[in-house]
Length: 457
Image 1 (spheres, helix red, strand yellow):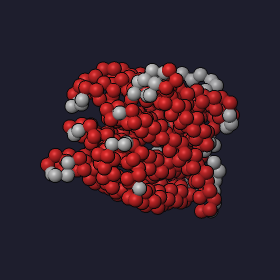
Image 2 (tube, rainbow, N blue to C red; image 1 turned 90 degrees about the vertical axis):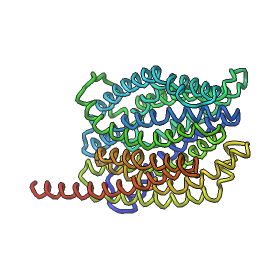
Image 3 (cartoon, rainbow, N blue to C red; image 1 turned 120 degrees about the horizontal axis):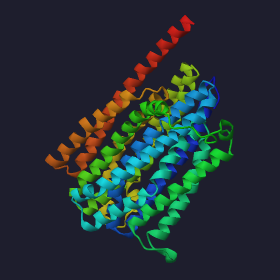
Image 4 (cartoon, one colour; image 1 turned 120 degrees about the vertical axis):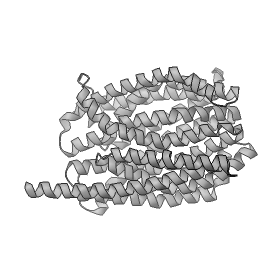
């Protein structure tokens, strides 16, 4: 990354950072898409089982990943301040943190997974598929979180094309393994939906290995001496990362968990409704990769400019990113409006499932627009290292307002399952407004503080 002076230069650098992240996120989403799609074509029960398993795993994965990506603004600000010599130490502490996170996940998963699935009102076949899908995923927890740390560092240096390359390797590996393990082709065991979990675990090891290879062999990571020297566990350094990472993790968890909770609450509906709902959520999540990628790009760029004290440039990147996301959300809304039937046909051949997916996608149009504001705004706030208010806003908007509204509409009106989607729309819209208000306050505060410090200096 380098300083920019004009809007044109900023646009070029923004796109240079954004495009590889977008490709990476779409590829990661495609992995989940192929898990769902290929499991659904094996059988409706497998689609439902993988949907339930994914609904339990994704909030945990994304929430804890959020804690670990707290390393990104730390590294980007260090680079902005020209303190490159401290990067390797921070990354090593991130690796220590990933080991702790992995151990906690495995222990808690072993203790709680059975009781949670037993508590849910699932058909026995669906419950069994969900259980064994998650057991298979657990074998990839350690490399997944380790790679998250490596990717956070890679992206913070502006080398987002490296992450893109690694993910593009992972996609065909995962799809190929799905083909072998879900359907039992070429003599491999025919595992159905569980095979998707096995394939994902193996893929996690592949991307971790690729990440290590780049860290050791490619520039600028070789010059930064990342993982070349052992650094002992430091409570102080871990505390610094947790102070940023925990609010980020909770913000992500609150948003992803509310979608998963809705899926779990909908377990009282029939298997067709569960499958259709999860398919619609899966496609909407694929479209969500656009604002999410812009969010991650803005964290890097705003963090770099803020670290260097170029607050005007940081504000310009904020406007550029949020404006781009809002414009693109209109395009994705048109996709959902006019191509809903074709999208539904990708996930299932069952006419009833296709019809329900198409209906759910109409509701998805509205929260796509809110996501286009809320998600990039969070990325800007992370670049400023202002993370605590955001997770409070997300909790209130999604859990205090959105989920209860959805529950009331679903349980006490004729809307049924659609009521939950209206609740999601309500929570996301309120969250977008509150986050944008917070950003305005933070930028004003930074400007005032910088003006004071400059006058004193």
